[in-house]
Image (cartoon, rainbow, N blue to C red; front, side, top):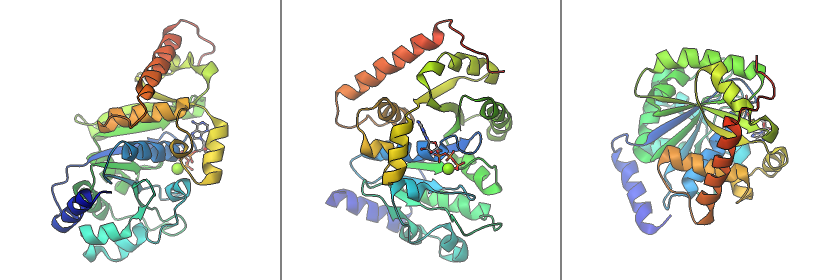
Length: 295
Ligand SMILES: Nc1ncnc2c1ncn2[C@@H]1O[C@H](COP(=O)(O)OP(=O)(O)OP(=O)(O)O)[C@@H](O)[C@H]1O
Ligand SMILES: [Mg+2]
């Protein structure tokens, strides 16, 4: 962060500006579909495209929040401190609870082993989110796959809710249900987008089938890359930090750019490559080559 952007950030902490930052909430259709992986890589790509520190990740998965592991961070503080010292909740206290990744991306970590049955206070979560929106331009929230009252508060503030799913029958069934619940809950003014994670190249024809089954467009699909995904976890570094040009990384950059309104950084060839890749996928999807039916 430069001296001037540092000063601007400090000023924002002191003043608690308007909550202008946009919230992108990720909700998993079920466990293990890659919600946290998408959250971390989306957050990182959004941060990488900005000169100043302006993106914060919020881990609201109360059962198995592991964003810090995916970022290789050992957070000193978590939601627990905020719940314990609710009366202290202001921009300065909240900033002191965040962990910081080398990229400038910030993280409010989940209580991985702690909260158990003690759910987060929804009102406090709502207030914390408003403060984070006054401090950061983009808030990316991993809401796990369970709809808690606290999670609802985050979804309500989100401009975009990404429903993360996979192309298998249990995940598709759950996605149908999640969409049924989220659409009336959120109403107009929120965009609910479906993202299929870990799409095998051979299954690209199934995206159109999935759209028919869900009666909802699949806005995004992230290619499967098991080897890179495994290295990322082993290294404690997000995919977008270890690899620059893979299809997965290009798709994440495109996703971050579309959802957070900032151009991908540096590599001039990247957008063209991503566009070519997406066009190729689109052609494959529209080709009437149905491999197998989803249901
Ligand atoms: N594009 C991908 N290609 C292959 N594997 C992937 C991809 N994205 C994520 N994975 C792998 O899928 C597994 C589950 O990912 P992740 O932990 O992000 O899922 P989750 O939905 O957050 O799970 P949980 O329900 O435990 O919170 C991980 O092993 C991860 O490396
Ligand atoms: Mg997760």
